[in-house]
Length: 309
Picture (cartoon, one colour):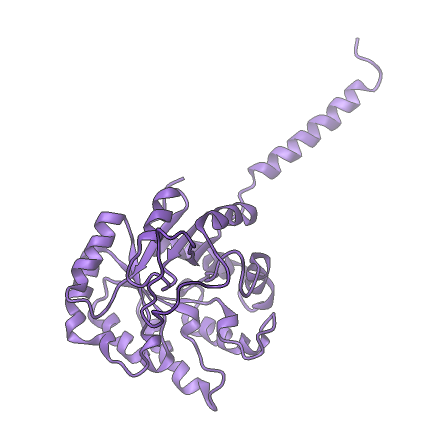
């Protein structure tokens, strides 16, 4: 015969275990970091910065192992690895990171737009190393017109054939060139980094910034609505001076064409991960809950092919 009170204890224990089971079964939201830059001081992967050949070291190291632990801590399911430009056109460390943790990452490299055969280089990194796209940075060449030059048509045609994703670190006044290529090559998915980099120091930042809005008509274009510290003049969280630009981009593109990414990894140069997420969840309070889910993860599933599981 059970001891007095044992049945009550059993009921309480059962209810406690049931509640714990329900909590464990409740799916957490999908969070995907679509812009994760990693680098190491391992001499096996030397720096070759295209614009700063003298750069051999930066203040902190951000190896892939840091990001694996942080993703686990904050419940991120996947991330898109990006070459931080320190390695120039050599994407070996990104490839190493991708293949060490293939269940967590997809990868973008850098590709020299002036390479004699950029289409072949794209094919090499995608077919031989499993990359899903490339990042281009016309922001470093503000007066250049290479972005939509005819010499790059073969590259974009190859990107269509391969199903590549191109992301662009680009200035607002350069958007018409990107608009031209988006119209010519609709099979290439395009991501615009860092909210299109509005220049808050300009007397009128809006005239150039609105040029990005013309790309909203292309269903293959997404804007990375993230990294407010890249834009803010105050450089103080929660970067209130950036709110009008985030809100205008949201109103123009809608939740289905926005994504989220952190940029610089652990150790955080600007924001720790909890504040990165709080900026989307709390500071940008004009997002609907449904659109916030799209921005933080679900939209990325329409752009990249992430590992199953």
